[in-house]
Image (cartoon, rainbow, N blue to C red; front, side, top):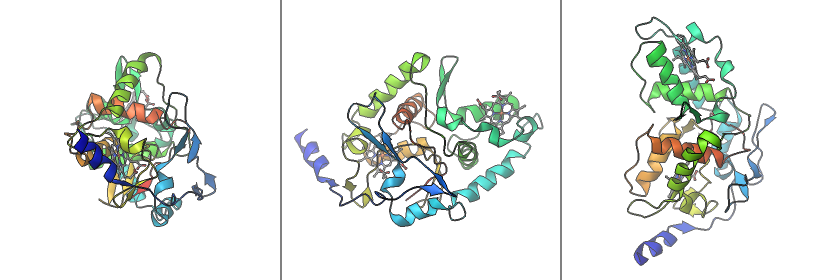
Length: 275
Ligand code: HEC
Ligand code: HEC
């Protein structure tokens, strides 16, 4: 046990400053909330910071201009997909949905509970793909789904993260909270050990953020594609040598709800850019 504690302490190093401490995230004159008072339910954190705050100047710059932001190539693919007929019913998204812009406000309020189940944007899209189009479900974090959910989430850009956590949602939120604070893996660490106790510090070459999801799905320079929340959760669990839950699992959906609630008040940034 002692051994782990020593190992854990040794991987963090203090950082001199937040790269983006004094920068403002503004795109075409629209200013985004990247720093805000934490909601009451968070006991150990008083201020929320968007992940954008912690990125290097070059990475931040890519998000400041939609022409430079590589994510928009993938959003264009999703716009083509929107009109593509698929499945036994001979329908495309545009057969039934007039304009993707009608989905404004969805990202900021998901996941949400429907008929006793916690549903993510991916679940909602796949319900249309299978039940309404008669096609095979799209892979949870596959290329088509990542691009389409990024396009839909983008319609909420600039809106405030605001998920429901009471009533029907409460048990899912509690489950997510429990997972957030549970130590797992060979490194015996919880999400909170990095993203709550050590944000602002360096972990190897990486500047630790609060692990917010207001920018997801987002473009990562590392793998040059759109990354989903569950993909990122999986990556973080692998990094601490834990066996990750599956993308789309009840565990990751609950964690997504809980983490979304830890971003209450930040602006949706989709598609953000990260290293
Ligand atoms: C046969 C008609 C039909 C097709 C085709 C269809 N949808 Fe839907 N979709 C619906 C209906 C009906 C609903 C539920 C009512 C609503 O919210 O509009 C819905 C709901 C949704 C929602 C949730 C909206 C909300 O506010 O809760 C999303 C997101 C969505 N569809 C995306 C898509 C995408 C992406 C495609 C193409 C891959 C697609 N839909 C294809 C009819 C369709
Ligand atoms: C050993 C430290 C560590 C642990 C434990 C950890 N992460 Fe991370 N996580 C990172 C690093 C490093 C990054 C990349 C830099 C950053 O954004 O913090 C990251 C990034 C993220 C991001 C992306 C943030 C953004 O703005 O792009 C999310 C979301 C995230 N982690 C969620 C989680 C969740 C959920 C858990 C628990 C299952 C977890 N992390 C556990 C180290 C960790």
